Image (cartoon, rainbow, N blue to C red; front, side, top):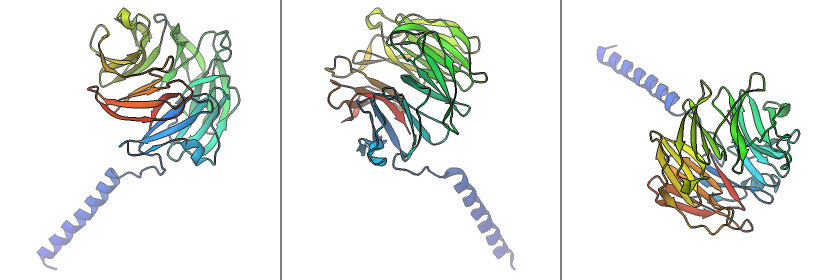
Length: 344
């Protein structure tokens, strides 16, 4: 065998190995299903529904849960949705005390949770367990609690009683943080230790707490007069940013790429995370005639701002999507009472 032929074989062999290695690294298998590249809009109902919009906005599909599951419904007053660490989505319907579990890419039903729920509101996942807040009777806060669900069996493991309001619940991967305010009433954040499923600490915030959000190693709490920055290592408030009085009651706090986003009325505001006060200059304002459904849902994701409006709660609501310069890029009607966006 001559040297030229040997060299050619060696180069060919190396090329084949290189191609195989590149394929392994750059082309992981994609999840299978009709809903892999897009986002869900949760429509509160009456009987709730879920809409799907593809990332390129070319496809809008309504009632996807009912369509996929032979006309089945997901119960009354769909409140929120959360994902686990694999391929499942959990849809909370607080009017039916129901959590419907579906494959997040096909939306086929895989199970449900119906026990130890009493007006469930929000959920999150840590260490193979779901933690779901429950408000129970609206006439007292003494009966609020958190339900702990084993996600392998979908069985309730325990409940954690509270003596205060429970609303949104989020996690930093180590601890759970419960917002002790709802509908602009209440204050404070309670920390749950998932190792013992017990309350570890309560952190005071400003009154009329509206939103909480974790960014890096801080929890930000937007309330009536400003926003508290809480160090998650020390569990102490280290800074309070002032909120201009003309937008007192701002809500829907989100943080993306070092910028705070929040809403008031039909406007969206943004402030750099390095600033010492919050801006009262809107960069998006949309038209709404709704008495209670203005900015009913809000999200910021991948360079876009998502707004939903519930109109009169008797007819279909709509969504609008803007770029970060405030330009409208897409709008469409969805279902009744659209209250949230969830991204696949």
